[in-house]
Length: 212
Length: 186
Image 1 (cartoon, rainbow over the protein chains, first blue to last red):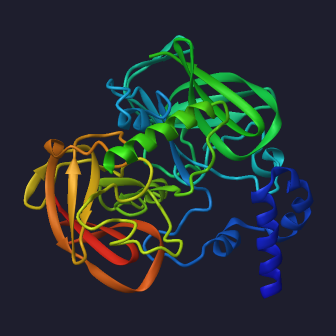
Image 2: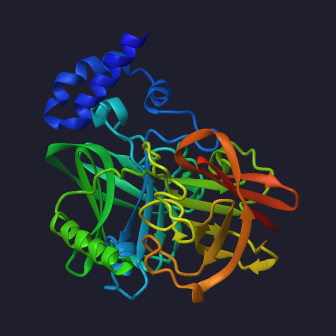
Image 3: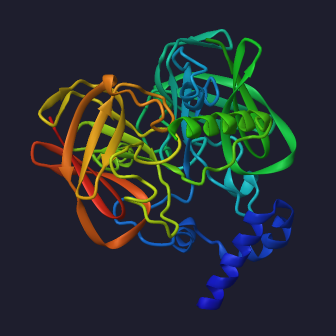
């Protein structure tokens, strides 16, 4: 058992250290990683009786990007315009399609809790007005485009998006990147007068432009 | 000293902006979220809710990593963001009472002044902020001091959780061998 654990942790070490070594570690990792619950037990240094540490860590992205840091540095005084709170699953040797996601099937754009979009100001997306408020986001990935959905079923767990609560759906093209991104990432980027909500994982990248 | 630290942070921000072309890496201190009722999102999709949503905390989880936490990394008597990175956010979805004071429904920042045997929890109106560098006591909504409990077990990652209590709920904050409880009543 100890040897098994050592091999497993060594495999992890390989990929956390260097992306290029990932392909060498992939085969070993694939043999061992069967389900995320098993994986989670090995990754945690100790049991936390209050709140277990998630395998897919949560993160937060503001628009303007890095708003809290800008505020701390005193270089911004206006309120933030938007924020996303999401969890960051990682590939762990898998490929986004079809090992993690399936084409044409809804995905919570993250892990665990549904991904939350906070609009602190009214936004316009593809000529549609979205009122300021708290929403969740999910997507339906297709081969060449992703459908990004804004939905009102807030504070929910992301497995079962309820289409009855959809506010709007937007189709955006997928860009195939040359590099593989280990952790799913959502950030806001400023492009001229537009904010782009960038969602990227493995070699797929989609951008949803919005105006405030 | 504080000024020097602030300058250092600004310098880091500058460095960060140079690196802004690359996407953000995973935080060393991962963020997490806790609800009252506990596990609200799961209960919601399972149709098992027995009481309405009352509170949520969003915080980052630094690890002990062999360090002395209280009285070391977290200095006694100083305002602490109770976490890492962004300041800890607490949202009440209905009006509550803390330390005998009414706290209206809304989003707040939660700080604490940590001492060896007691913590003073601070609910503050300055939201969307980083650390406690810009902490302004004028924006306090309420402060309340509680006695801390010492655990035998050492907790590697900072943890927060809500639990049911008489007339309301408690927010448990635990790290290393210390546990502090903030009582909230309806």
